[in-house]
Image (cartoon, rainbow, N blue to C red; front, side, top):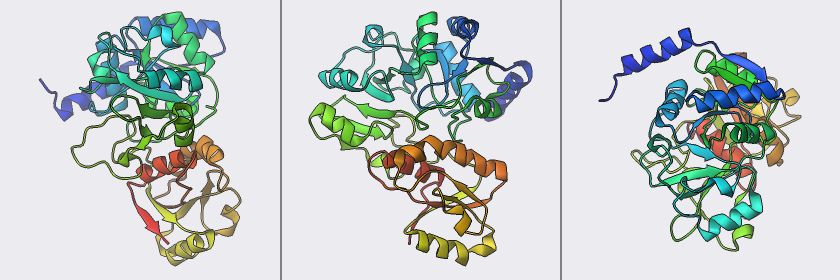
Length: 358
């Protein structure tokens, strides 16, 4: 029986009122032990990975996984990624390890790559959103790996933010969203990559990129020795009612409270547009070194043309817009290839696909 919206809201309020959220240093072995014990007991833990912070639950425990959706307010048609330390943990989680998956694991794992494979019988149904596939990732971050090893749990973990908001890349941003919603946050400092993992499917006739990330389309094609299809949902709005094959494909995602619009053009065209709309009291999300030239409140999200620098800072910068109380934001448009494709993918979702070609 489906619960009403009011019932779910009451449950979430009770969680917030009754649960105390603790932040512990991930460098302390006792913190790792506590996190492992919580996972073994069906509870949630927020922890760092090399990409962003995630909310972990035992992927074989459906009741534990349900708590992720309640804590985040996440739609249940949005599948979760299962994290393991290596191929030795795959039996039961996947029913087959295709040859393409083996090539990708050899090239990029552990690292910021999720490989969609045929689902195995031991994965909780709640992880898979009704799909016959499951996304598998082998994180390289020492804290995530230590928690898996200590607990013995493969864990399901989406980003540790309220659904739809920018993903957190530090423990304080996790606390801002998750205070009262889970018992423990492991503080491992800033995440190195800054955007979620690349997601590629090896199920079907051709490999397909569903979410761009630090490992680029070109990287995947070199490792596989063949062309990788690019899902239309990466750069376009997902059609109403379409099946969500991967996290990060929903219509509006990674979004601050402000109305964000991407302006695609040169800096001179960008500045002219901002000046012409000064009556809106806009703020700007711009590249490094541009703020002083714009004359409005600005947040700089990285060097122009440097996808890695932009990726590392984009989510923190989107949260900074909320902290400034911005209502209208015009954003400089990154490139759409290489690692910059991942940044563009996040920004068009933060902007609800509002893009103006200058």
